[in-house]
Image 1 (cartoon, rainbow, N blue to C red):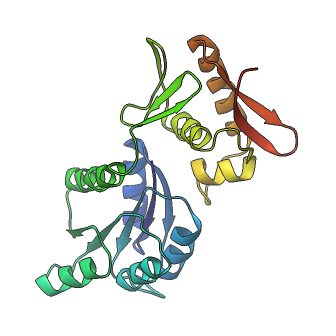
Image 2: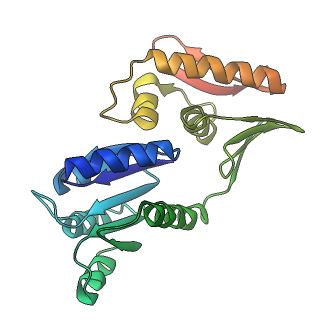
Length: 224
């Protein structure tokens, strides 16, 4: 699952980012509302976490603009403003939930899980291609009665391939989606994960394979 976290307190950003990544999420971080709009409008996120008070554009205005652009990604609003009118304003702007600061990390994670479950209600838990199944709820790749548990990054990569079967996905697009815009990871981490997934597919006896298109990218294809 990929999240965008917009918060101008950089210490809080770092702490929450570490928490979320340890909880299995991929996270992009921005520090103002204008960047939040640019990232959320141009990225492929499962959820948004927006602070209310940010420079350049506050979180409520950023969310209004995103909803105006047709971006329906679920959003959790964070703010120290916990009055009824404030909550109403945030919800009316398009927020799905509201969490007042200071918050407990367990509650933050629970709110995020609830937000993502609502999004998952309109997406199937199982992705299928050839004789493969990818279970979004358990991060397992299955073939018949065999299963392989995937790491967070391998799961996101496999999910992307199974959502776009037979399409050639560029390395840059995959790196941006799985590792994030601000990641310092090199493309060799993609090669390592592709190699690992290929081994798992072989071990499962899958009738699908990840093919490399030289100079272009990768695609998930049925074995001929």
